Length: 290
Ligand code: SAM
Image (cartoon, rainbow, N blue to C red; front, top):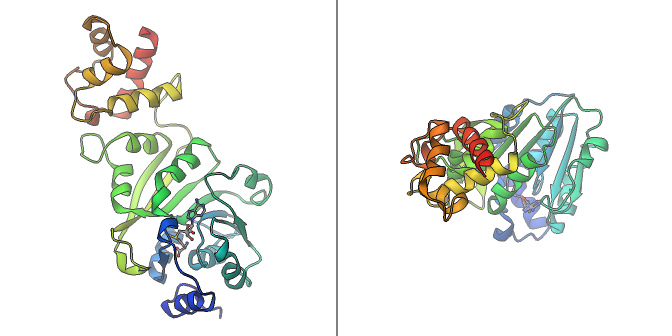
């Protein structure tokens, strides 16, 4: 039987053998709890016909589990010092391919023609580096990669913002961006004790199930997100004040009031109370009034 990379003993041994000093600046908090790794892999619903794209394999704790559960694994690691460790830990797994690079700079779509061609579906599965969580998730969503699920370990607070419903404190432009493309579900809250070294925040495993089509219809997606951003510029201000500053500067009040009335939205409401559907109606009405 192949030894688990994630066991605390093996993790320590690999770090020592390769004289690794873990970099906080790269979010290097490695998982050493097999139970949590099982939660992550199970949530991704992999099988022997599926592909998994991992971002940041580290020394391979999750990569090993993915290689055993999926047909093909591609793992993108930025830190060159980890490549010899991964060569050692992934040696028994010819279906695991390590790519050296910054995931934010790579063209991921190419992987579907090269590595994932024969897979029946592909999911992103990762314990993400926390300093770039949002940038990575937004890249995956905006590039419209043909993904089934994104199952990631992230900071608990970010997971709560991604899954927050309207009318809650955590609801904001990140919730809307994520919920536009996906159905989010927090799978598990995870304490710092399962990592080496331990981060100073709680974490969460979240599953983002990609929708077949966006949650709401927009005529112009970019403008929809522009309107959402503008409405949240000053959270405590009313929707009318934020919209006036962004799109109706110098106008008398009547045009903005007419736009809001045509969507049935009270000008005194705050952005955090608007549903995706209301934002979609609002962005269409503003576009046609301009
Ligand atoms: N998957 C391993 C585990 O669960 O034990 C390591 C996860 S650790 C939280 C994050 C990993 O992402 C580190 O190995 C780090 O070097 C890598 N990383 C950081 N920024 C990256 C980037 N922009 N592109 C690819 N990998 C990155």
